[in-house]
Length: 328
Image 1 (cartoon, rainbow, N blue to C red):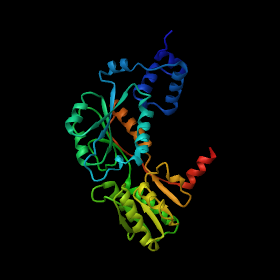
Image 2 (cartoon, one colour):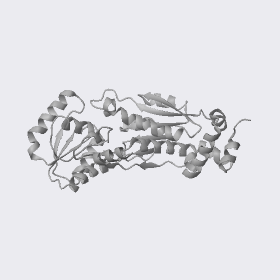
Image 3 (cartoon, rainbow, N blue to C red):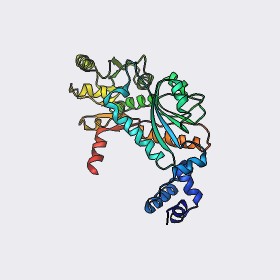
Image 4 (spheres, rainbow, N blue to C red):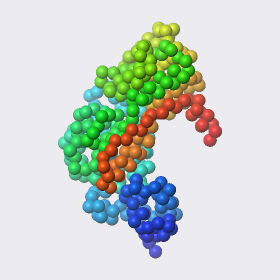
């Protein structure tokens, strides 16, 4: 006897319509009820018929995860191998939401508005990854399907978005050093003219440390790392703490120079918890951002209004993460 939606409904003690909502518009169902239905489906070995759902919706059944080409830029963090983990967490976040729907996600890289418009004919909705310029945002405007832009731009009004707060992240960096009694921090950043998130993080930091010393560098190259370490070594006697625009920049210093001062990076990369000294970082949680992006897109497909959601960054401390790891 085939396992049907009605079979799952009976096992979970809900209506068949509720089972349908769990798979098609999961954001409209409470987490407890959704868990009951999914557990019942797993026990029975039920898999929703995505083709049938697509026919009922008169759509393609496909959602597009779109990454814009960043070629030609002097600097783009996502092109550095050191940040592959961030992309992986973002994908996992989307998967955790969409896998419980009747949609499938396909992945695309685009460079022009024409490519985006053609893609819009082949899918029911778009999640745009790391939209960080007004030009990229313009590629998404006026499309005939729901769109969610993530995760750096602020001040968006006509497109649904899920974003981080880089200014608040900079504030958290400063608050951490303030809590340790630091009065003369050094802040290390780069590409401030072209990278808005970097400017926002610095502005947040300087809201508490307006006189903070600023050292700029090119991020990523071996030569730039050597020059940066040399500069930091020369002025080490002038500061009592260190903050950096990202963990990669912070590690470039700490792995080559033993400073012995409180330090805070940004991004909460998988490696920051390996440091034994007072090292913290700011976690913008790409998994949470893109889980919310998935929920937002499903809500738009269900007919709900456009909205923008901010996922607040949090401070994480190496000692706290290490203790949590050892206690499991």
